[in-house]
Length: 467
Image (tube, rainbow, N blue to C red; front, side):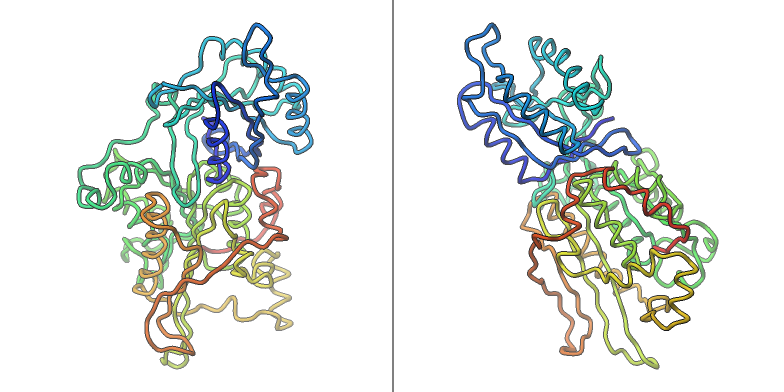
């Protein structure tokens, strides 16, 4: 299957251009390429509009792009190692646009030419009306496949199932009757958007198990679960759905069982992966998702997820919870939720990644042992206090940001802090912090690059870290 991931701002620019004039209009997306567990992910990073004056009008086919303009777009894609996605508009299709016979004939020859020009990179095409799209993708010359989904990510995220995919029964799931009380708030469309989402959760411990449970109650039915660890006795105070009989069982299996209890086996699609985040299986599974939740316990994992989210045009919701106590006395406690959108600041922009800690957790076991011996470690390996209720508050805030993002009930908050107790205030409170993108941010420079950022450089590390 092929999915196309597009930032909301680029999608809006394309829509404004395609429907901002008379007749058929054109433009191209430039996209990075990523291989996912389900097939291909095209990560849109730019829209190139074709102006009306760049269209031939005196030839047999009345709307054709001038050759020099077309070659300019192809060369631009070649310079940036991008795939090309053609876009053009149709009017009057009432939410079910389809490619015309002229479209099919022209695309058959043109797709082969473009793929040859771009060293075999895939070529895709979208035809739009004001309500939806249809999509085809050529991974090799010949017969195309239907684009299975288009995910537009931003403050009002939507999953669009193209016309051809709907006819092949790849459409959104029906609304569950159990969600009627939510529908009073969200409406049928909002609930359907939740049900159409595929969610990856990295880390199924104290916070991640809360997140999985709440998403299932909301109506999410498609999950990727990633965690290398098994249940230990010390986890049972906070691991949702686990009991003493689960000691030694993989955390992803416990989470899958919880989801099945809520939704039923027949309603679920779950991919449980008991592996490290740096495993190639984890990369592929995350690339097949619409949103990734990071419920990890160190900044090495956060650094990787931050870069993955940028490269894949993938919204990333990161949560953390921490407690500092001394001899049974609470000194400081709280947590935070960060929402990384394709158009917004990343964790680096928010200064929410400690590079020293990240480097420590991404280094080899020998290097970490040497750092500990030399006293360079700032308590990163120390087991910290953890309480189920604090984790639950942070997890609920993270799931609520997902809900707001998908339904558009209100603008989302990029960064929210939860204070149980802090040095400057004893009262419990939750506050937003204003953050913005940093122009020179390295992680943001990876936007839309897909596999080209070289995920394998993390896979080569020999040590695993927990989630």
